[in-house]
Length: 67
Image (cartoon, rainbow, N blue to C red; front, side):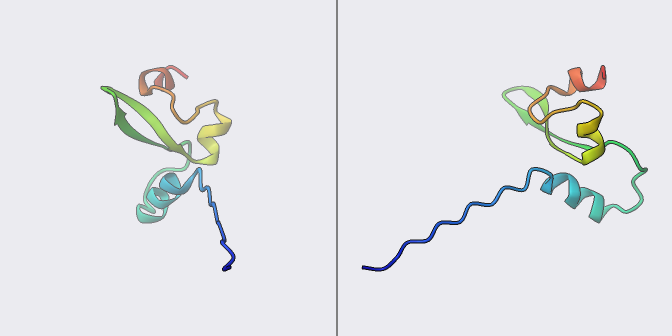
């Protein structure tokens, strides 16, 4: 009987890091990637600075702007 192997990888900052690599001209500071979810814009990926600033994935963009 062959052995089954499973691998699960989680890259919580992948989208934000990709944006930062593709656009090197971005100013330093918090960065959030936003997507439309059920009629609202929400944060889906953050860089470390955005997380330290108190932002969180799944947070509505309108709430994040208030921070």
